[in-house]
Image 1 (spheres, rainbow, N blue to C red):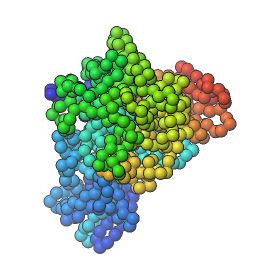
Image 2: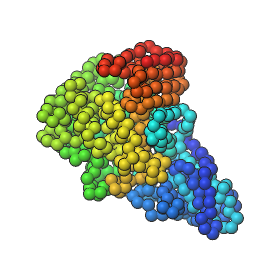
Image 3: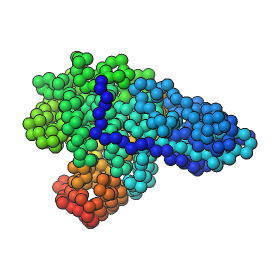
Image 4: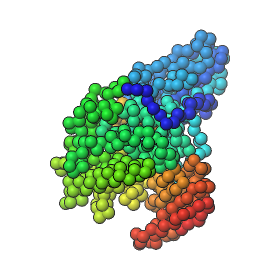
Length: 574
């Protein structure tokens, strides 16, 4: 493969020194330090510290010490260091698990890092632990660019967890899947991309990660289709066409239209190695022993208690409902991109393909007796995933939305932290905001509050250890609320690089919320008053050059919304 091409270069990774929020002596010349949040980092030690034994970790024991035998891939390490020989920056040893050929290497100017919140340092008498700093590596990030606050403190806590996760997991300069592998994956990067857009006015890292994955893709069939969705979101948030033009031919292939049957549906059952190579699989970084395979969600296997996985028992068949729903969405996005670059014939081709796929899905996967979608051609099983993807990707006819949404809501969080992105989108799209809010603020072990209660400051790879017993504590694909809250709860979604924006709050029973949302032209400020018995009221301030359409609920008992168009500047709406 020739050298990869990029239309943008991300900014260099920076290193921020963080002082400990707690320092205490826990034994003879042994110091415990808490830096408040986990980060991919090293330590800055006093110049004259001499020989040290350093313990780093993400998790504490019940006795308030670093857990030196944490479960799964929760991280702990012990390092011997001599500042006289190696200098005051702690030297982190490389881990063979995340420094292989498929992994993104740390920039040379940063050096190796390790995810930790806590340090315990065994030192000589006179060691001044208050001088130790956590050297946190991350992409340049404006902590003040985005803000969210509402009348439910639980949701505020979830937002802060997810926002910080987006910042902390930028440490490689490319979106990666946490610390265990440090490999970019399209499904992870899609959620990462949307979260980054919503927490900082920064678009280069998302573009670079997307273009990297176009050229060094991973194996899931579903993930090829995300590359098309990522390209479209890049245009929506930046308004720039250059990347679409440069990668247009590859993006068309990534829609997988070459695999279509006469009815528009696709299967990768008999995909050729030649076709896989046309998608850039089997490149020098490809670390897998097989080609394209459908994923849907985390599969059954040895990494889950009982081997049940997170697919809600989805029946994996050659013609798969979830994969074909994503195929339809990719064709729709490609049609929109063809229109953007002015190719009306290309737009028509992909528009017709999307219509055909939608028609086939709604004819062949629909169980009219139960009012749900089954998992694939020939299946009698209806999983959460088949129904939530159809809803989230706007493929369900209006007359079927109620029964499908009721089924989706009845399944609860029967999906992984990745699947939660589409479960929440499905519920908000189907006007079931209260069910979505309940899932985001749930206090059981399949929710974000469980991560917070366990002491994590980043989202996890899975809901809990028993659901994936090699999980890590630093995975941005678990940070869906970072984009769900701004895009769906507050309803802020751009159209052409934020020159035009659609705003449609879906608050459910949430009484009050306010947001500061970053754009390239300055922040959008919005406050929503949604007290019971009163019309929703919105205070909105748009930056110069941004025009909004705002859709608010109609009068009580009416399904007709109030639509305010061509709004600029400051507005008070109800």
